[in-house]
Amino acid sequence: MEDPARQAALDVLAAVRARDAYANLALPSLLRQRGVTGRDAALATELCYGTCRAQGLLDAVLGRCMDRSLSEVDGELLDALRLGSYQLLRTRVPPHAAVGTTVDLVRAARGNAASGFVNAVLRRVAEQDEQAWVQVVAPAFDDDPVGHLAMAHPHPRWIAQAFADALDGDLEELAKALAADDARPLVHLMARPGQISAAELATAVGGTPAPYSPYGVHLAEGGDPGDLAPVRQHLAQVQDEGSQLVALALAGTPLDGPDARWLDLCAGPGGKAALLGALATSCGATVDAVEKAEHRARLVEQACTGLPVTVHVADGRNSGLPDRAYDRVLVDAPCTGLGALRRRPEVRWRRQANEVAGLVRLQRELLVAALRLVRPGGVVAYVTCSPHPDETVGVLAEVIRRTRAEQIDAGPAFPGVPGRGGGPPVQLWPHRHGTDAMFCALLQR
Image (cartoon, rainbow, N blue to C red; front, top):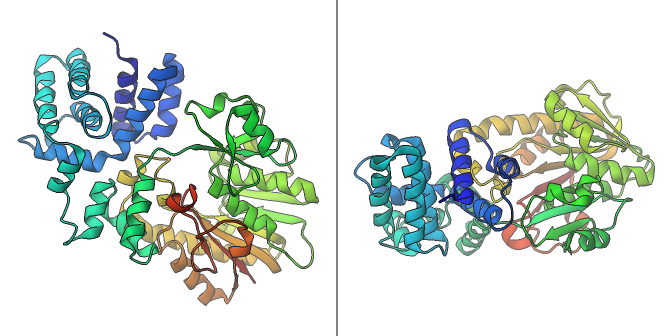
């Protein structure tokens, strides 16, 4: 019996494991290619993304249910075991169906011996529910509360610790942050300013206006947002509300003097550059957008079609653009992306703690470059999609020490947004705001 949903999920899990594919890019493409729609597409999405998110917990449980290490298990069988375990522990799929459908997929691809192994392991997994397994595989809360919460809401421990540090060690807040990160997010759209209002977009797509961004819309249903008419017509784009808010913070900060030249120093793939370009249109400004990678620069050009945006293929640290020439500069710096893990479910297991130091050096260099490019009295927005303190307040403190730049209170640039942190920078969170965990600091020379 064909099972297009589970087969699609299994094939994407294999691509994530073997080719470092991104599930949120690979799955929609595969579903379109195979013509999988409706309930099957929804099931494939839940199983694929959910299995990716929960991988650490699933692997810990599987390690207790077999007499060999996971490294000794064939990759394709491990994909199937993870898929079956996810259904057993984190969905309402009946246990017999979760085991039976997984075994059938393996039998069709690998034969009876492999399917027998998968059947035996999954039956052991099914002996306990998720909460019981967490008590078995996680450290005791009293001994290691961060480690316990990291396993209960599957995250690598180093990421959970970074969140805890950003939340000043508040374990109740940490649990909420990890739980929100572990949930399936809504799709957010941005209504392009001057072309369609958020209310009009919400009506057109069956969504609801966002609570904080005047251009944001939240979609209630799944599916491929690229199929929506306003998105196809370039009236709207997929963009997390937090990303909208940090771009709006830069554009809305009051300035003395000229306000005609804006710069996006790390522009790929172009979402924030497009929003800035649309806002610049209404006030007669222009935007320069810098992107180091040629293929990403092409994405910026596509995103900004029809807008007053000029794309430059260059390294933002040495862009060749004139110093002290820009009124507003956005530094949306390359980062670990820990703030968007709910949207990129496999990244939490792909990122390594030893990558942070190299990214921090790059972030400092980009922010120093931005402060050279902005005019005296202009404003620089330093933004990361990460709450990791090394990438946020750590970078900020070091650059301010070196350059003597002045930090502006970013709070007023986020009107109506509660729980922004103690300032002067702003930290957004999924559990507080329903956005990615975006960080934004505003600086002046």
